[in-house]
Length: 401
Ligand SMILES: Cc1ncc(COP(=O)(O)O)c(C=O)c1O
Image (cartoon, rainbow, N blue to C red; front, side, top):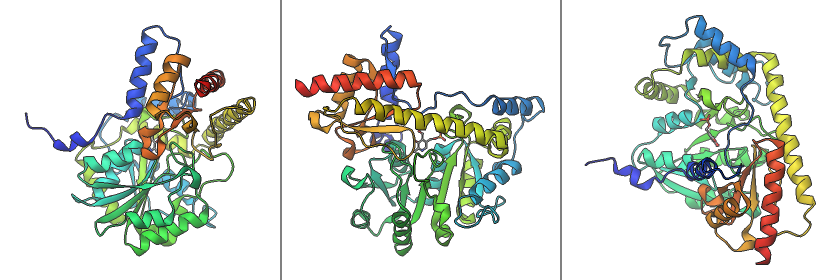
């Protein structure tokens, strides 16, 4: 049978593979603490659920325009306005009529952005490590991925020389994601500005995946929207999944210059028609209701508390082969177990079998993740405490063996 050969280059998402294995063990009756998924353990705030139900009951059950409901695009534009330096939220940086498109979650916004940009054979620069979909989707669209090493000793931010070394005449875009999955890295203003200037000087698009924008622990991350001077080459994408615990609702957006949004609109019209209108109504409520910002801040505070819980437990193990760098944002720890001299996959399998904790191998995010494992703190305090202690106990034994 003839099939699309592009998929020969695309393996099953290792994050999904890890989840499948953990679920299979759980189904077989093994007590497993799952610290693998990037899905908030919180349920969506009840008021947002009520807004969705109200919309269903009010008849929002038909097709709506592919661009997205005006009230949702206005709410998105208002949130984006807060990100522009010195604007005090006065001037919307993106025109909700022409420069914003509602999508089926952040992953779909990324898909639409890349579909809008790429021609076959175009090259895209992506840091290694990164969320696997960033590279996989480029391959799926017949683009070529050039991975740019983001070394642990550089705080997982590629050096400017590394970006430059990866350039070829075919390069058309770079993809960034800060706060980063899986490392939690957040660049300083100067780094981001230099990177945008680099993109400008080589006429590249900058696709910025900001789904963790609201999840940070110390320094507030800067959005690419903070640099209006570069906006003509920037595609910003975000979603409500992580901030409002709405992963299953599947709603997000992209913001970009009109020409790109025009392409994305045609791509969306010819694939999904529209995001479910009752979901869009709930999303508009989530973004604009003041109490929902307080609810989101409450979840954010819980992640900060859990991050501290991990750091406190770590301090109780003064001698351990596990090295830990506190994440600056997102909700993961990228645990460094390179001292054990084992592969990430081996470490994950052994921790699952011998300590009963489900994690994701660092190599799921690229070669630079070898020797690392990703542990989520989007789980209950009790699971995080018990799971992290079990990992540390296991590492101590493995280090002595
Ligand atoms: C970096 C990154 N981007 C996008 C997504 C997808 O988010 P959404 O649920 O909005 O599609 C994820 C999910 O884990 C992610 O980690």
